[in-house]
Length: 168
Image (cartoon, rainbow, N blue to C red; front, side):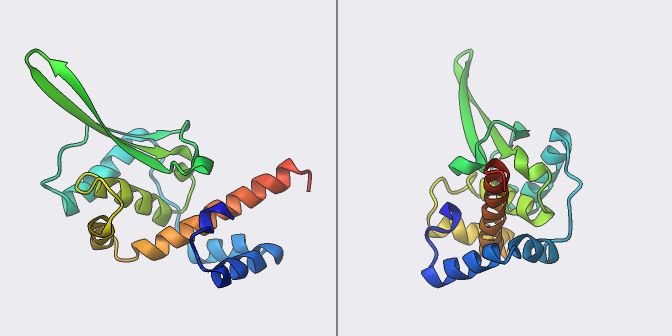
């Protein structure tokens, strides 16, 4: 349960019990019934821009927002925020982009929002510090609960993949 490694043993034990009873997926489906309609890169760009305009108007503009099937969720890359600098004549131009792991194309809408909020917060705060998490909770009040439940979701996906891979 690598996604829950930093949580107390009692929390991990409860999650292990849900997995053993084959109830983790049901718990998540019951809690997060709302899918999202953000299926294309254009729709994702519009979705991210709307959140940015609502909460971070003065942040630097985004040039690109896409789903990226190459991001490895299992290696803790759920999304990325990058700034690429290019020389244009005598000036240096920065191009900012956000990439969201392709698994979120089909994930519950709340999980997509949590990842987008996380990546948008990096426009203002580069490090995962107190100010960063305060900004995340300013944009999405339930950020920490969503982050935990997203970790449960990824644990559930990993368990399903392991069971399929082991022939069970």
